Length: 109
Length: 114
Image (cartoon, rainbow over all chains, first blue to last red; front, side):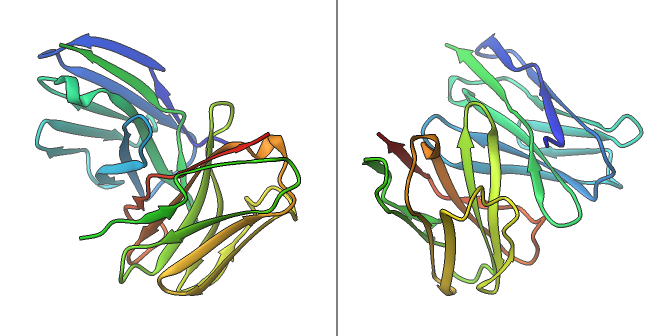
């Protein structure tokens, strides 16, 4: 069964705008990861946030984690057409990563 | 550095045929994962290995699926006999130091069973 559920399922924005994607999960975690998948390619790891962290940055990416609400968000600032992709959260359970259903982001030039 | 390499990139075959998918993980990585991705079910973990030993194959759908890792630099996923419902994109991924550490994915094999 899915551990993480992303919201929204799809998002369309103009270049330069910010994009926010959310992930909700059901059970306690040690860490949460975000991945990007371009069309026809494999997933690429973006960022890992541990359960004792509340916020993490990497370039134009900002991830927050609220363990009390069992949710995380991924913010992409100043989006570019090259950010067009699907974005997945992945949460760890006792022995494996469970990937969510993904958010499809379309950035128009 | 070379990433995870999968072959073939595309495979089209007829129902009942044997299919073998291949994966070369990143050198030095001690975990290897096989996933299947479909529109209906998303990304599903099929099996993973640690130091070439299968640890959890609970995601393997049926006995028609088997996976091996004869050495640290090579793994195969075999389907015999193949069925149309096996059509999907199959990914191999590897990681270092833990099953919940960041995973590095290959570009997948798009499998179509006619």
